[in-house]
Length: 115
Ligand SMILES: [Zn+2]
Image: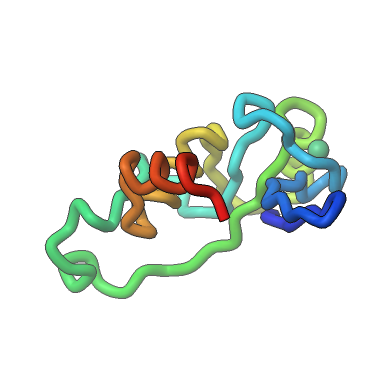
C-alpha cells in the first residue's frame, strides 16, 4: 500500500508491504500482485487506447505491494484459490504514472522543483 511517512517536519510518500508492513525501500525489492483472470497477459497503458469504450468498462481488482520472496510466498498462500498475476514494482509504478498522464518530463519537473 502507499502511505505517507512524516519525519522531522517533512513528508515522504512510500510503498509499504501489505504482508509485513515494512517499507519497500527499493523498487527491485518488491512486486505488485493482483487477483486477476489467469488468461490475461500484459499490462495496459490506458493512453494507448483512443477511448475506454474500445474495451468496455474495466473490472477492478485490488493490488498488493509486497517484498519479493518470503512476503510474496505468504501472499500467494492467501491467494491460493484465486488466480493472480505479478510484476515488478518498477513496471507497476511506470504504468501508474502513465495512466495518470505523467511523462518523464513531468517527473523531471517535480524532481527539479519539489514542493
Ligand atoms: Zn514484506
